[in-house]
Image 1 (cartoon, rainbow, N blue to C red):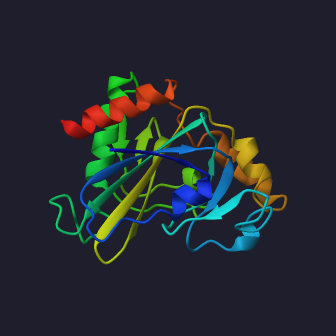
Image 2: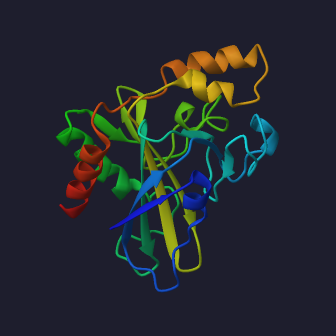
Amino acid sequence: MRRLRGTVGELHARRPGVDVHRQVWLMSPIDTALVLGSAQEPNLAVGDPGDDAGVVRRRSGGGAVLVVPYDSVWIDVVISRDDPLWDEDMNRAPLWLGRVWVAALASLGVSGGEVSDCYRPGRWGRVACFAGRGPGEVLVNGAKAVGVSQSRTRVAARFQTLVYRRWAPGELLARLAVPPPQSEDLREALSIAAQPVDAPPDEIRTAFLTALRQ
């Protein structure tokens, strides 16, 4: 387990080493940034990736995520290709991680979590992560409680997970260059997209680490 502190861009830029083994990275960002998925166009954001507007691109796929210190909890898990948890199928690969998060949330009093088993972006999932559904992500009463994305190298897989303690769809929407009337449709979709987890960040991290060890 490693605690990593830095800007959102610096944390996303970290890479597993060639001698990687199973690791948990507890991310502590020091800034707020809109994070675009690997396939998203830069002009989706108000600002450009890497500039002072706080826009970052990650290597994993999916829609945009707004990372806000303290309001979100970001935990990554890295496994090597020879790890028993490795799965070549990109849909099956993160399902075990979703089950860990279901147990962690239950210990925090958030029950009824279900693990999404495939990619269902719907109308807006390719724009905003929490508006769609992906494999390994955890849903509570139809709303996303845990977002999951994944990227791979020749030797390792990196699973990135995010939980919102406070869901502020207006702040996300303000950073996306989506013109009206589409922006109003997206606003409505985002208003019911997420299930915040009302617990202190360290309690969420501890719950996850405990569930992972079980």
